[in-house]
Length: 60
Image (cartoon, rainbow, N blue to C red):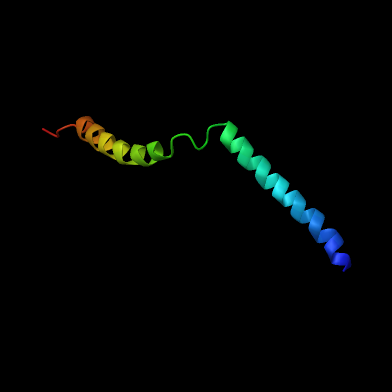
């Protein structure tokens, strides 16, 4: 029974921290554009390959 007096405040504290982190993430616009980062990975790969080909010098 005494452990409940310790576990309940710890649980409330953890929930408060989780809610605080979620509110911070929403206010700092972390969830605004979720698809852009996935598309950047695909687009950057093509750009890197074309730059590598243009930087190579022919040995002739």
